[in-house]
Length: 170
Ligand SMILES: [Zn+2]
Image (cartoon, rainbow, N blue to C red; front, side, top):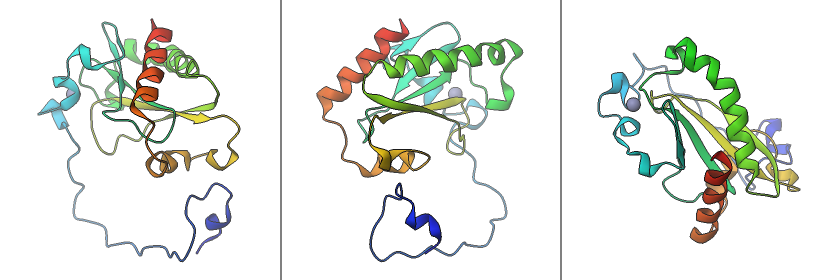
């Protein structure tokens, strides 16, 4: 195992070994909703979101996960990150700070990670992942992996946390 396995934040224990990489593929698989075709974010109604305005929407995950809160900032319009209009790009900075502040409203949050991958789906979306305060094992980029490892939040706690974020955005 490489030295990353010795990090305090490494989520796994026991007998592990790295997978070998396959050969590069001929071309990348299309991402979900490419060109706006059959895009689930475009198809979603505002009632599926925690908060919306004319140009932005804030989505919860479809089910609770391990971290106290994970939400997604999306554009209303179907654009990719590099397709943001100058107006949307100018609004993005303040919007990232606004959403991050709103996620802190959940309480007892040590940090809110703001992440963009965009490998799964084309429609613009930024991740906000709330890390619980005072749990050093959860710091850093492994928080995104711990989110899939920790038992999901109880449904009522998750809904309450989402409501706090919605209220803070309003
Ligand atoms: Zn879309």
